[in-house]
Length: 186
Image (tube, rainbow, N blue to C red; front, side, top):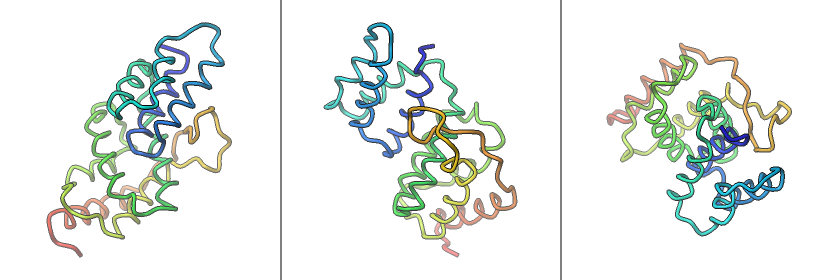
């Protein structure tokens, strides 16, 4: 595993969610290159990728993040989603799709603390996410937000383990999502 693999995986998920831009990814690669004792071709490829399509940059980040802790990266992502939703609730639909994608990619690895992600089994991307959906997504991602903690990495939004979320809250959110995405908005 490369010494920067965890940061790369954290960044890959943030990039996929649209929380960081390709310019942020390139800047991270440049900063990381400057700290390494020897040349790293993989990072140079990322550093030179400012004009790459999103899927190619995702592939490059995926290659350098081999061996990283995916669960830590998901925690980091959820915390950053929470912070972003606090200032821009309109992102809830995009974030719901991202969570669905992440759930599909890592579902066999996710511990029980991510139980709320089962809510997204009912997401139908043709439906709109309501204001109450944004509120629920904010509430469910809050335990993962470590914004008040001192940063543990050079990557913005590095995570620590959350304290956990309420099962009762998760169940009510799950029921509301099923109603919303199956047509009955109550």
